[in-house]
Image 1 (cartoon, rainbow over the protein chains, first blue to last red):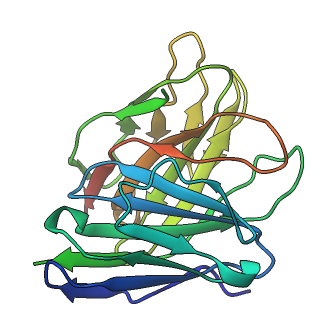
Image 2 (cartoon, rainbow over the protein chains, first blue to last red; image 1 turned 180 degrees about the vertical axis):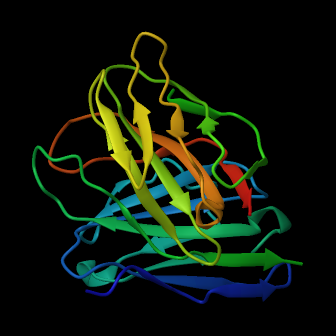
Length: 116
Length: 116
C-alpha cells in the first residue's frame, strides 16, 4: 500500500511568487491534515479536511494560504504571495475515519519550502 | 490551549547508552499522547502511543508511560543503537470525541545522535 506522498520535495522561490504544494493521502483515508515546521521549531497544525470539507482551519496563518481538496482525494496548499516567514517544511498526514479508535496519522515526507 | 514541552537537544549518546527524552504537556480533559520519530530523509512515523492514564506505550525497545499526575510522557530506551539517530517528537491530541480525531499538538522535537 502506498504511503502519503507529497510534491515537490523541495521548492525555492522568490518573495512575492506563488507556490502550490500537493499531497496525496493514503487511498481511502478521509482525514487529511496539513502541518508546518518553521526553523526547527515545533510542528504546527494548519488545517484538517474530512473528505472535501474543511473541518478545522484554525491554524492557517493568514489569507495568503489557500488549501483545497477537490473530490476528497488529493489536496493542494497554495501560498500567494509567498513571504520570507513562510519558509519551512510542510507536512501532510492522513488517517481513516474509524469511530471510537485513536487513529494514527500517517505522514508524508514533507515539502521543504525556501522563500528568498 | 494545549501545549507540549520537550527537553531541548541535541542529545548525543554512545551506542548501548540509556536514553531519556523528557516530555510534559498541558491539556484539558484526557488527551492521547504520542511519540513520533523522523529518520533522516523520511516523514514522521508513529513510534508509540498511550490513550489513558498509566498506559505504557512501547515499540522497538522504546517505552513511555502516560503519567497524568505529573502530566508527563517521557521516552526511554535501555540501550540505544546508531540506527536510532533521528528527531523525536512528543505530541498529543485532545482525546476522544466524534468519529474523527483532530489536530496533533507537537513539541519542538529532540535531535538524537548515537555514535558507535
